[in-house]
Length: 250
Image (cartoon, rainbow, N blue to C red; front, side, top):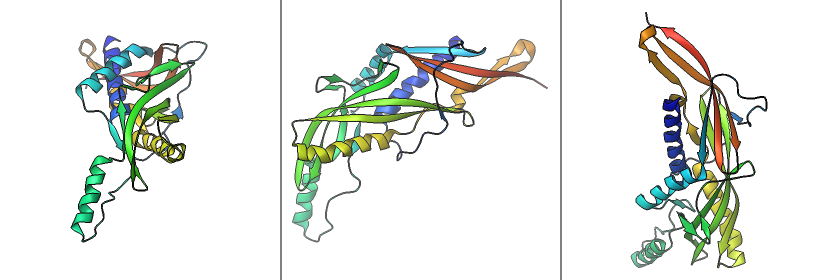
């Protein structure tokens, strides 16, 4: 059990890093079925429970922000530099591009919001502080603000994988024209949704167990048959139910 808890905690550290700092493919529906809450009648035999609170995620995120570069995501695909034969025009356009990055960058804190993971009324919430710039109609619009995100979990029993899906519910910009905000806000929302989904929270090679039992000359094996999750006011509790079997050495 101690081995399992250590393993899952290590994996969730990777999940946080993936969630906030790695760009993914275009958005696709998460495989498998949505993870349900635990059975009111209690967990079946062979269930391991792992609980993680918001302080755990704060420590992980604080370390990543401190020791790694701030994550950034492009707000548009391709370059705006013209292929014109006029070198001076191309140079001016390239210089403008360097000043206006067309990116949104996540911050550890900003707009009176701290980036992190919070548990509220049965939901996994992730407030995200950010800033960035975007080239619109020949002007470089610099913005800052924060977004409110929610994460849902699903489990694919065939793939033995738990997936997460981030959904940006709202984007709040500061100090920018309402007209421009109406264009940039959905762009930020769609970019963040598309870049990180779906997330492989727990993969098959980590969920499966194979423990040698030398005294019995065999191996204890286990596959996950069900995953449930409950969110309290300050913690995420994963209920992982295994189907065990044993294989004797020949």
